[in-house]
Amino acid sequence: MSRDYLIAIDFGTSYSGYVYSIAPRGAELVPNLRRWGQEYGHNTPKTPNCVLFDANGNFMHFGYEAKDKYLEMDKDDAAKNYFFENFKMELYNKKITKDLTIKDGRKRPMSALKVFSAALRFLKDDALKTIFMNTSGTRFTAADFSWVLTVPAIWDNSARQFMRDAAVEAGIVSSSSQDKLVIALEPEAASVWCKKLPCDGFITEEHEGAALQQTPGTQYVVVDCGGGTIDITVHEVLEGGALKELHKASGNDKGGRRVNKRFNQCLREFFCGGLWEDYEREFPCEAQKFMYDFEIVKVAEGDVKMICYYNLCHLVEQNQKKGKKVFNSVEGVSWARGKILISKSKMESFFHESLVHITDSLCEILDSHSQIQYILLVGGFSQSRILCDHVRQQFSDRARVLCPKNPQEAILKGAVVFARDQAVIRSRKSAFTYGVKTCVRYDESKHKSKFTNKEGDWCDVMFKKLVGIDEDVGWDETRKYSFTPTERDHTAMNLEFYRTERKSVTYVDEWGVEGPVACCTVAMPDTSKGMDRRVKLEVFFGSTEIRAKATDLESNCTASVKIDFISK
Image (cartoon, rainbow, N blue to C red; front, side, top):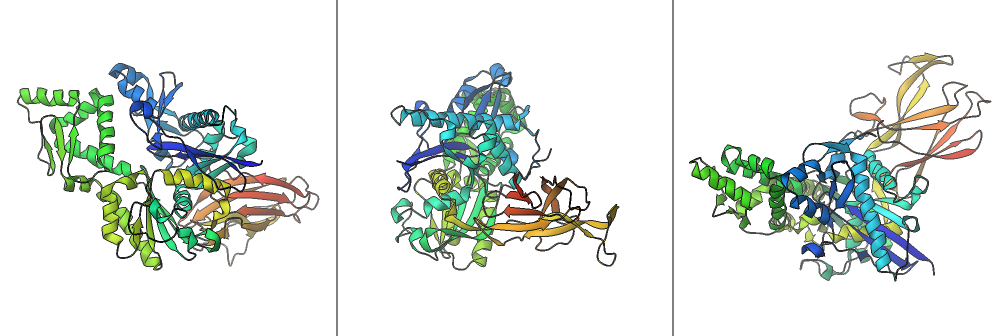
């Protein structure tokens, strides 16, 4: 019997995990979720996205084990090793180069590709081990599976390509079999799963009807609230349950980590004379453990009480015995016998930045799309009662606010469903206007610059539009373009891609035009027809990544062209 062999990895900022499916082709797909941390008293659908390397840069541990081993180390041992967490956000809004480095908790650099691929390699190996244990000892290799890797929808193409390169480095796929790796957008994956859920799949009484996919025309917003990003997409259900994107993906880096950052700033303000900074410097593992405790209490509602660890209490006592002022007056924060008490209103203030962004984004979307019926909150950060209550208070009069019962699992399970049927997202909105730099014959009355070669005068900074911002692009749609050489003896053509948020531009060096954001080289070996030669470029914009294929029409040779979005 023919089967679909699928593994989906949700590589998050704070937590990562995977699901797998080995289902008969055509049968209902049932995602198998790996649960984590039982040996540490947890039972979670994802594990902390932490990587521990030894002093020589050799991989040691990942996830709960990396976190636990690092926190158990004394100060000297911890200082020798490399501990990375929350490193996924190093790819957001950054210029990504081949030799990009990221810094560990002690500000020491390591190759970003090494860190990311080590994490992915662990998840790959663990997935194959888990499947072996749950399939009567059937031994599989990575090549037996099609793989999915999730990324934020607001990441640009260079970050998506970096994750693909890291997957190759990790042995998930080979360079020659990259078609077996699908990049899925996190809010899209969540949408694909949530549209299937019956009303009792949500933690709310506001949804009493059938699954969303059963009502064509239904429009809804997905707000993916992660540790690093808030990622928002808007979908409409089509006949048959497929989805159409109505609004280009939006969001930024104001996820759950921003709440942690505001709490940390509050602690610096609350303790006098740099006491908190001293604690972080002298007892980094203990301070980190305290921040992990905050991750747990921030999802609750009401006043919060946090028990402090020994060395923080000891620093407080030492300073008090010396007659030093230990605490500043901070509204909503107090100290009581080794505990820090935080009022409900103070806790809510830590969420302010994230909530303002969510509110502003949803207002803009709802104002533009008046037929939206639902707002779906997914992702680990959406487990926060403060966040959910805020969205309901702000928008319950405009749309029904829904949260699946297991919001952390929605992306994981949706990703493996998406891998099986990528056509479920029938069309997307282009995030930018994309174009390619072209040469045309120079006309003094039209063009602002020229260059001269043996064939004559040219303007070589023209922006040839390929697709416009906010334009609907079908998931399998191909755009075709034709180019000619500027010299009769050219044996290759270099194509440079540019992008802008403007709807229309003339030149690649105008304001608001970025680039080149990617480039590719097309071989043109047959020069017998000189200038009268053509290269056909086919560009696929409708999937989660931009792909291209070039055909030299003289030799009729077709070659896949890798559009390289990563700088040298």
